[in-house]
Length: 401
Image 1 (tube, rainbow, N blue to C red):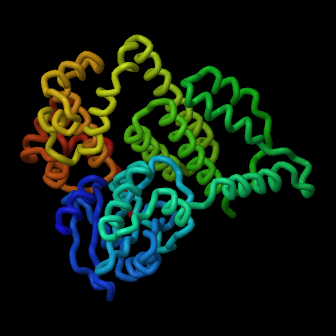
Image 2: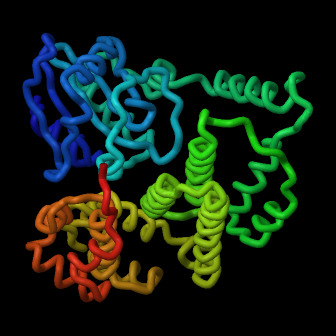
Image 3: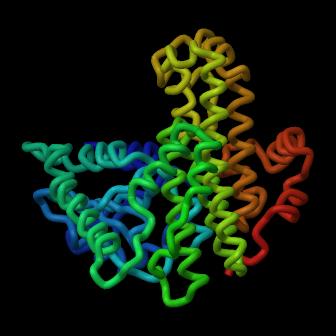
């Protein structure tokens, strides 16, 4: 069996690392399809040993690290594979977790995201290629994930404690009120969201930290995460929602005035609702978009391969389409050529890296598969009106400590 090909396939598909260990847990091989990405400061030898110890010959283990990122440990007859890290677009409640030192915020932004279903397909591919009796998706989920009814039971107990407690005479914000707010974001109903805020008359929730400011920030970060998921359900591209979420979390962490936090959080919810509204308005004006899944598949492929050199011919081949037809179809429904769309999204990602990282300009250019730093700089200035240096000096995070 061509193990090297398997490792390269999984790494490039998930945009993350894959390592092969011997049964004595000595590392034998490592491959990453992203030359700009490493996790050595996070997945230390001690952490790796813990991750490797959690799998069994019978079933792969899917393990969260600090409940923020995810690895998979896959044991085969002759080796153990460690796949990750990744982040999931939607929350998944995993049974296995390793607690370690706080993860660097800047580094977290660079971890690739994917759907849980996509991740476990590659995990099972790695496992089942070495087995006569394959492991099923259901078996893997049953072993690794908290049962849905168990999660509902936890939520029910939480509701009982907070809303029906005999030790307090106050009634906190009902769960259905929160659902109405999230539903407003998902449907792009900005005015309804504002009306819900005006009708609110609930006391402050129980503190989420000993310090009041920290408690408010924790509550704000939870709200941002929920609003982001609601926007994705409303049709916003997950990568865009995730980038915006990171930006609002950064603003919340930097804010030191309690009275400013509520306005910031409301702006976030309103921003997401507005994005959904704009998307719905656009789609209502171009009904054909709803009838053509090809454009969505094409955009999904582009978003998943922004770190690679992309050309229309290769994308068409992946989708099993004629390149000219795909190009014309894309422009018809999106109002922009595929070539310009790819460049636009690479520039958007370059902006994010300039703001949130200290990576050199040449590193950013290489990670986005530009032919050179000057090529990136030329296209960046044409799109934004700024040089790379000017943009970083104006918008970049100054303190990465």
